Length: 320
View 1: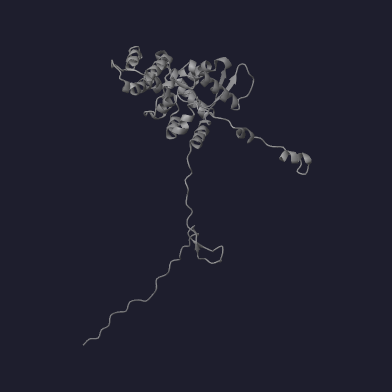
View 2: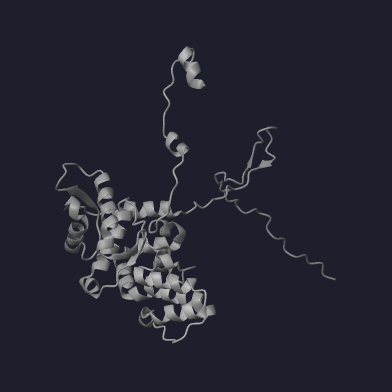
């Protein structure tokens, strides 16, 4: 039989390509600090995201805002609100820009202090212009004339400018009103003290304190403001008092001023409003009054003590 063999394949080796070396990464084996061997493997460093806060995000907005061209506001100390409103109507028809403030009655350069003083005066006198209610529980005034004039839009711009320039907010608004501004959700509660109309507030207190049905009927019969609020029931039962007071309070604090609130929000810088809604607890602090009790340590912590020489007799007394 034929013993033909298969042709042998070539044993020539292919040319080897050079191995590409990479620079060591965080996962490369590195010598151990204790043994000097390469057995210790270092895990990749975790990238920890920076915690976002209201203060840090507001600082970013302020930095961006300061890049715009400044406008100069020359104001009268006794008419700060009126003068600033006129300047805002003139300068800021489309968008806001940074301001420097001077006063007719004073000579000085604005390094931030005059701006903060101006906005402090603006918010202190706003209750005579666009706000109403009890002290530190203000809401917007219900005024069609001011609404047509765009006064609430201007106030929204002033609020924005104050925060973007590093000044403080109003710190005098009603808390349920401020909660409504930042969320448009139902506030947690309505305090009768937040009702901006003194006569309505007194009548609500009277309704709440009635001890008998006869007293309640008399108080309810004289409560004509309930019709303005859309409450048309002719009889109020004793167990309905709390619900009634809440409905009336909500109307006078929020619902009656719906058009004014909408105009105010249009004047607020959109990025600032978005930030305050992202951090509502911090945002509300710029709008409402919060009593801060100053302790002795709050003052002394800012002192720098100037002691006598360590070896002197006077130093012993100072240490005691």
